Image (cartoon, rainbow, N blue to C red; front, side, top):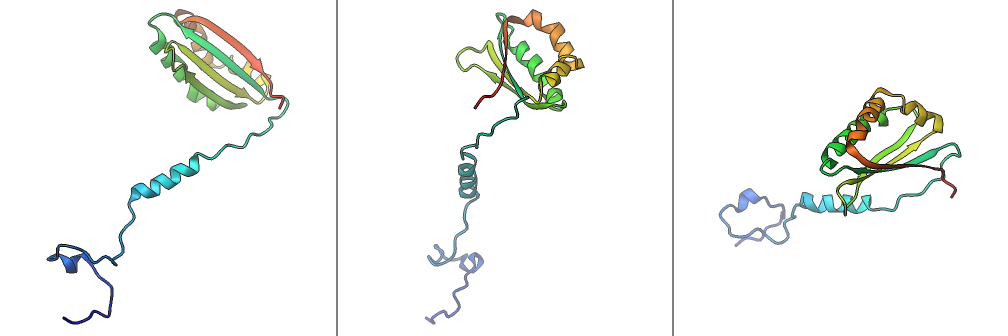
Length: 147
């Protein structure tokens, strides 16, 4: 049998063979590439000091019995238009892992005046008119970053 000088192989040339030569390059699977990119996303976020006039709102909501799905839908309807408002830096909805009737809104506004303007927007006024039929309790607290 003659010795091969050129080591370039193709899978097509080995259709009749049971194995592919060991020195033939193997393709990396896409899965391994995805795993690497996931590792990059787990990096720690750098904390930044917010300007003094920025206010954070923490809103704790508890739905009436059997109303948590409707409450969630109403709050979700607020998210997109609110995030587009001037002065809205962050507007996130969380739900309790232990109690499905408990929700938390985490809002960050450039100024308290921006939040006041938000409370006069059409989507907030719609929410304000409907919330009493869905809520068992609501607690709103304004916060300011100090460190």
